[in-house]
Image (tube, rainbow, N blue to C red; front, side, top):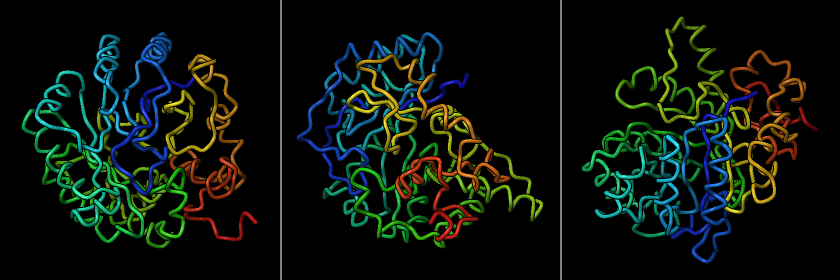
Length: 349
């Protein structure tokens, strides 16, 4: 049976920003659904078999009043705990509480300037607040990573965003290639082109070979692992995959439903945060039952069920294709990833 190594738990749909790509359509007007007891009972259920890295996310998780109590409960289970925040609510007092309850923090930074980041986040001042959060966390020796999401709107700023993340002292930098779900559905015309996608992945691979101080990795870009394999073999490059202790537990492409999972603010269980379909709900079914018996989870773990192009691909075990992106484009999570190196536009028609 597959081991759950990483779990994102969306504890609130509330958010103080209005990000253009938000998978949840989060806003300040939404109300929380799950109680403290429902959340902690689920953690106890999972703890019967697994001790995954737990990331409390949202929305903006710091808007939930009992966020630190939830973290403390998970700590008592001897889990490693991360906090995924936009950083805008982190002040001196909050930074000290974070240090007490969390092992690592992820901050969102979608550009190297306030103009780019604030436009992406829908709030003036968001950039300066996130920079301030990084400085406070660093001052209190709280390790943090930076997640950056990109479309055509800000892809020109990828390299400078990486440089900024490094200068701020981030332990790692994750470059997210947006999947069009939630609010991101409206960004289809802004999504990075396939041609540029591969240029960016090749740039990233060369950067990873040189970058020794900060862990870097593309996210929602499983083709990267195929690119790395092809380039390593073609040019006889000694490429060693590095792994952050708080990573998703797999140095390969898409691992949705294989070693990671996502629980939404309403209790819905999904293979990853961008996945459109729900595999079950913790309000009426145990997480472990869903993890073991959901047809969606089973299909994702059975590569023979994938489209013939993926199932017979030499890189099925290395790449796997983004299952959420396949579903968003073709209405079938077992179809080919439209960013696939070997796919052409008419193949699925």
